[in-house]
Length: 128
Image (cartoon, rainbow, N blue to C red; front, side, top):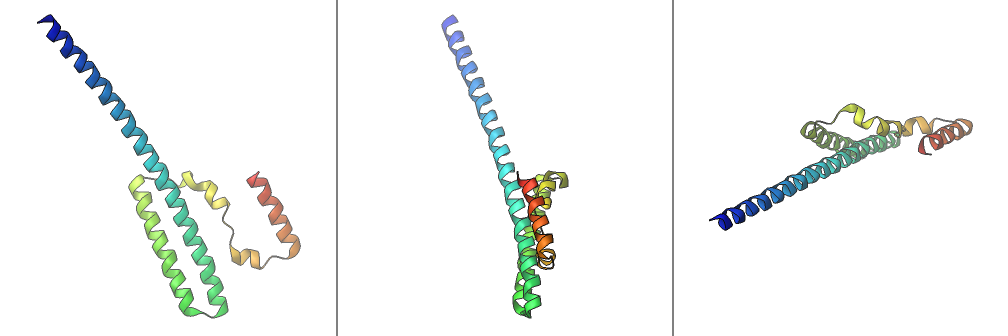
C-alpha cells in the first residue's frame, strides 16, 4: 500500500509540474499575442496615415476617385486599429513614440531647403 501511495504522490507532483509549465507557456503565448497585436495596431496607424497623405496628394492632382479610395482605405485601417485597441486595452501612452515619427507630407511639401535640412537633422537626433 505504501508503494502505491508513493507512486500516486509522484504522479501528482509530475501532474502539478506539467500544469505549472502549461500555465507558464500560456502566459508567454498571451504576452506574444499582445505584442503581435500592438505591432499590427501600429502598422494600421501607419497605413491610415499613409493613405491620408496619398489622399491629399490625389486631391491636389484632381483625382477624386483615387482620393475616395484612399479615404476608404484609411478609414478601414482606423476601424481595424480601433478594434485591436479595444480588444487589447491599449493606452495612448503606449504609442507616443509612433506619433513622433509621423510627418505630414503636406508639411514637408511646403518647406524650403533650409527647413528641410533642419527637419532632417532633428529626425537624426530622434533616431539615434
